[in-house]
Length: 336
Image (cartoon, rainbow, N blue to C red; front, side, top):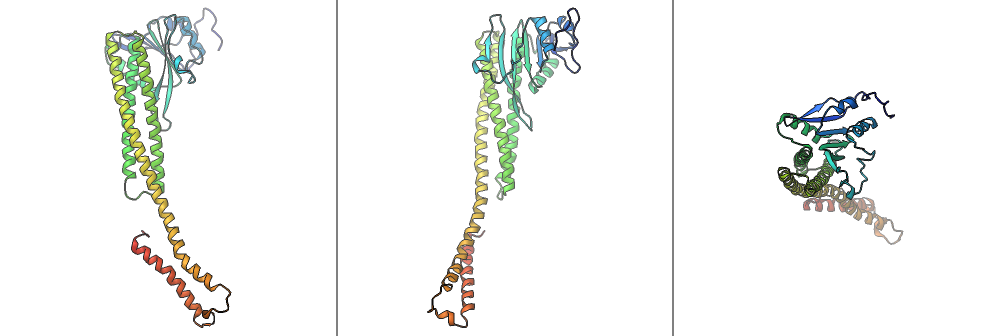
C-alpha cells in the first residue's frame, strides 16, 4: 500500500480499525481511531492490532517510532528469539494463546511489545482471552494501572481460560466414559469414542503447551525486573495457578490413556468374537471333510462302497461329526 500524501491524514479502510485503549479512572476505554491524526491525539495504554495493514503500521511508526516487521508473529521463530529486550527499551515477548474451538482448537501466536509505557499486541485473529480482558477492564474500576498490568491481566485471563477448557475436557471424557464402560460396545460406538478421545487428547496437549508458554513469559517478566512489588506478587500467583493446571493436564492424560486402552480392548473383544465364530466353524467342518476325503480315496477293498446303505451312512456320519462339536462348544459357552 502506498504511503499517504504529506499533509493529508489517511483514512482507514472500511471494516478495519485499530483497537486503541486509554485509561479513564482505572477502566479501559476504547477510542475510535480512523486516521493517523486521531491516533496522535490520544495517549493509549494498550494498542491491539489484529492482522494489521501496512497503513496501520505506518501510523504506529509515525506516532510512536515503532517499526513492526511483517514476520512479527511468525511461528518459525527460535525459542531464544521469543523473549528479549532491545537497546532502545523495547521489550519483546512472543506468546501462544489458546482458542478452544469445537471444530479446530488451536494455538495462536501473539507478539507483545512494551515500549514507551504502551503495550502493543499483534495477532492474526480475534482471541477469547482478549475479549474477556476488555470486558472486565470496562466494568471493574482500578483493575489496570499501566501497560504492564494489561499484559499481566492477559496472562491471568489466559490461565483462567485454560482452566475452563480443562473443565470442558472433564465433562466430555465423562460422557465418553459412560458410553464406553457399558457392557455392549459395538464397533460404531467404539469408533465414535476413539474419535472423541483423540479430539480431547489434542486439546489437552494444546492446553499444556499454552500454560507452559505462559509460564515462560511470566517468568521472563519477573526476571527482567520490570514489575513493581504488587505486580511481582500477581505474577507469582499466576505461576501458582499454572502449576495447578499442570497437574490437571497430567491427570487428564492418564484418564485419556485409560479410556483409550479400554476402548481398544472392546474393539479387540469384538474382533475376537468374529475370529471365534470362524474358528468354531473351521473345527466343526474338519471331521466331515476328513470323512469325505477317506471315502473319496480310490481303493478297491473298501467294504462300504458295495453296501447299499453306504451313502446315507456317510452322510449321517458327516452330520453327526458336525453336530457333536457344536453341542460341545455350546455347553462350554464358547458360542455366546
